[in-house]
Image 1 (spheres, rainbow, N blue to C red):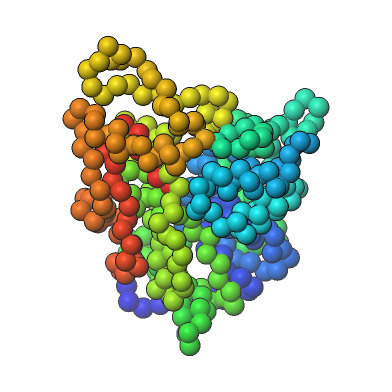
Image 2 (cartoon, one colour):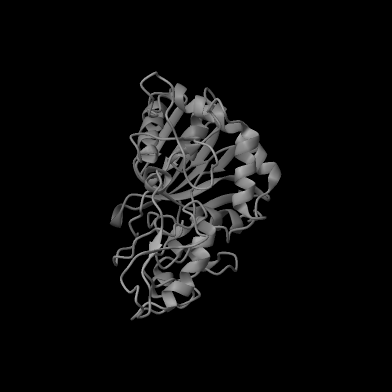
Length: 344
């Protein structure tokens, strides 16, 4: 297939991605005309629908955005951009209000107030949930239904983006495939503005807790078009993924740990305590970065397990390579063969 079979003119903006980010952006842009391009039914695919934990926002009477920002910076251990942290913490309550206006069915207390849970490194209860651990799926479905009912939003499903279209050093749209087999067509979608809401790159790892379509293809297309890609090595990591030979790996829900569950281990070597669970000292549930850092050391001690680093030699790396193989020179990430592994 080496010719363009069709050209689609898009009024207004073209958004690539039908998850929460893409749908929310489309709704916020209304009544500006927007086209949302998605490989599957909008709101059903990608990482958004898989998200189990809720959304953090300082909504409690004894909480404020400054405390939220302080908790975030402390948990980041020097890796956070304070300006971005403050921006996100300040805006979070307003974004929750937006989602409520769009119909998000957040859990409520008997008195009608929003139920707040405590998770991770937060010092206050500030996590809003939907049916316990179904925030991602429920919010995705709500936004998809609202977008479908919005006259200014056009949803195009069943398209797989291939490359951004560039003319005179300016992005003018994107190329996408649609159909299958002999009926596959290459389409050029032209737009005045293109917004990438394509999610992460967790599936480039040997084991992930994300859908396998999270391959960083949006980042690759942006890089090839000349965009500056900042900090791609920062990939959310789930140290409580469960190694049962599945990829993606199932995940112990964040809500479970937020309600007080603690992380334990069994001794790797024969000892009087063999088989007796031990609490991991200094590794409370909220400090996932420190838990992740401890994993390789623990995995080396497990019988019959090997720890391997580097993604280049992984058999799965070839089948998950980005289109054209011209992604910026970054390692795909560590391969951890062990009991608890995961990335996002």
